[in-house]
Length: 187
Image 1 (cartoon, one colour):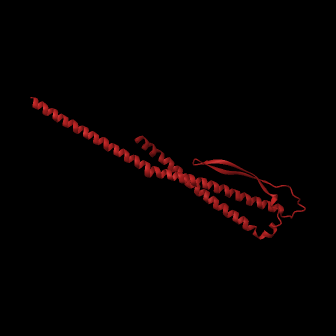
Image 2 (image 1 turned 180 degrees about the vertical axis):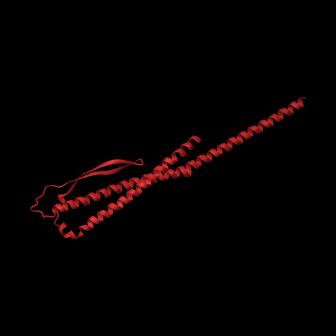
């Protein structure tokens, strides 16, 4: 039991450090998500005045072909990281399409990239928050339940053993005194 208590007490700082690291990463991810949200809103607002032109735009001109991702471990939690986004833009006639189509494609690619980055950041944020909550629960379990429980059990066992020792000593004294009385009676 004492061995388990020592193990829990030794692992507690490690778990607290993990919780702290996850807390920082969650904050960073929240800030990053807010920043990407603001950027996306600015990009959309910047092109609101061109809304009439967008009705002429052919949305089938641009498609997301592939989204490459990597996995990174942050404080022991595997999170997806956006590596690259490939867009598919089929050839179109520059003579029959309005002149602004090329700019429209680059604008849409930029907005799509920002939107996908925000989705990945939100996914990363959710994974980190779940891991942080679990780690916080583990810290609380150790600090408030298991360690005090082990300490209480050890205290009870020590008291019991002390009581047993005292009883044993008392019974030995009683037996000695009875033996001494018998010896005196025999003499």
